[in-house]
Image (cartoon, rainbow, N blue to C red; front, side):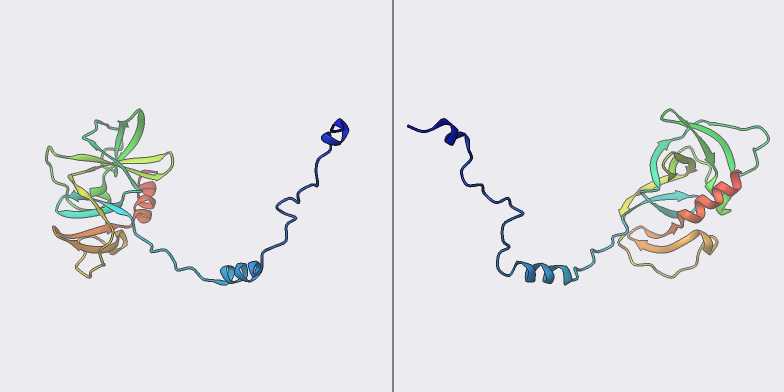
Length: 185
């Protein structure tokens, strides 16, 4: 018969995983892996939203272009009618400042009924509404830059590219947001 006191005592204790000896070659393999340089992952530009502003075909990264909305009602702000700031627009429960990208870039904007509103997000919680003439689509940013005559000042453009529909210009969003902030202050 088994003694109950002996049955309650554990058998020979198993060493924990941290107390076990390392397998042969483990340290050498670990040193080799730590010294190995891994190939840099390819840096894709991401996707771009292409849009029309007057005769210009422009693009912005989709991480900046938060949404596209139908024409929003723009509530004018008194004594600010001839500036870049067009007024305030309601979008998904938020009131956003609405700025004229055409006035910032100093280009003519088409006067049509197909105008859309591009919602730009500078930072979380800091968004702007910008009227545009139309959205041309969303595409991957995988084209090689080309050299061409720029329709606007060079400071605004971070590159010009060609796709099946023609030449489009990628706006430098950092310069754009800086100028919007200065023009609406």
